Length: 113
Length: 111
Image 1 (cartoon, chains in turn purple, green):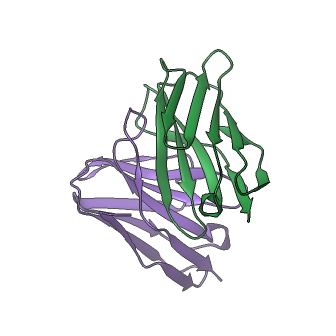
Image 2 (spheres, chains in turn brown, yellow):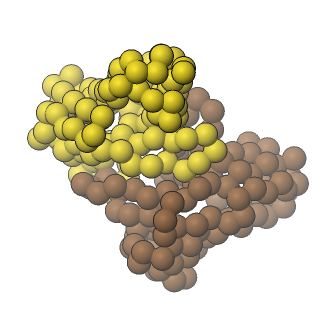
Image 3 (cartoon, one colour):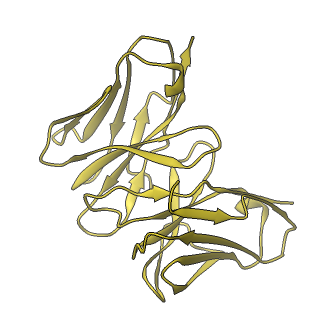
């Protein structure tokens, strides 16, 4: 929890509207990640960033875009929200895939109605 | 794609008993990690085991890794009510900077 925060924590939005979720970290980590978590699934990677302005797609990136204009902030945008994007979204920091742990935010529960 | 698959999906035991969860994966890995998620919270790292390690301990946690069977187990000894949570395994590969996650085991400790 320490060093990484997500906002908002809860959001209800209407179908077709754009939505931006924010992840903020104070640990100067180069790598940041956005995941979604749905019942019956583990975490699924949406996008990740390996530096300012450097981002790459994950396995479920359709309908999502990201931006990283400074090290501490990683934004996830749902360009036109759909009901299938109702989910809990988690941000994480730390270089994954190597011998290091990931640090997670508290999550954002997004409901698209 | 889901790399790790936890087994069982749900486990309910009495406080004080040991809890064992298993994780299987499909491709070669450089490490395997276990995380805990309390209801409505983010994930918290528990333990990491490297591909050249076979067993690791941390407090009441014991993790084993069998790369020949592509499987790992997490043992929690002397369970407590506070251990009630979902537990996830995640694998790291040399080829990218991502973790691949299983769907998790929901553990309930009954007082």
